[in-house]
Image (cartoon, rainbow, N blue to C red; front, side, top):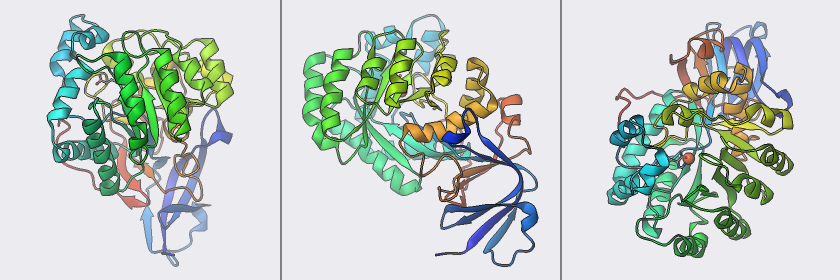
Length: 410
Ligand code: NIG
Ligand code: FE
């Protein structure tokens, strides 16, 4: 057992867990004690009489401390950019039409297949470091830009190496069913995915599918999930994003850990998520970036007792942002969530979407000491002066993360 670090003079300390729904627990003028990378205790600041007994005492100058953000839905391993498509979309071409013409996801598939494992690793590592500098302390990463056995395995191997290299929690998801590869038959490709599932068991914790008009059907989702469930994968699904297909209801019925996107989810789908304990992962950055108008029924979800989570969806097509602070502020203004609700969703809720809420996300005793020291004494400034970076320092397992200096582009 190692010594105790004392973060004292914290003006606001935010904690999050299920018992604090719809928001968070706010503690004022306190000290956070960290031992072995975990939260040891939280005391009143006045109880800290001297630095005796502590390895280190860090003065937080009355500022706010919030749990590290949990980005529970990303596609951050990829090669190539899609700026031309962004411009095309801005002149009116819909996202799914670009995919149908062999662009979109398939564009990134071509670039990712060409890239070596090292190239993918270096690019993704830079992205993650930028995300950590902006306050993210735990990640979910999906494959899905390989769409064949070798390249999907290459992506997930990169994911494992990123986890080891950056020493942050990384949950990996196999998303072979992200799109139908060019020139292949949908049913035959799905068959191939199902046949290869056992080989992904040691590489990925979960399985995902993009269930959408002209991509994969609800029946495909059911076939894949039944098999994946037998093998012990966690189930997640991209559902009801551009249209209502019924994938959310089916996924929840089969016990999905999370249903993601949900712009077109209906009240019946919300009931199914509640009954199954499925977390709703919302990604307002996608709606903003694609210029969509439809928002998920976030308040019906909250009223029904469904846990909300927030994520970037970080990917080169529908949301290239690295910034969970942006996502939280967008959720607050687009979905009319209070700062408390948005913060709880991006920390506790997102950890729950990864089945990790006991380990991190709430800054509770015994949890990982993953947190952000803000530049302000009021965490609501992040929502009010939106667009600024309010993270002064990110602490991962109690250690200060050294932010990179390189620019935000790849
Ligand atoms: O979650 N919706 C499908 N897949 C991703 C987009 C990936 C891409 O465009 O490259 C998403 O938005
Ligand atoms: Fe996604």
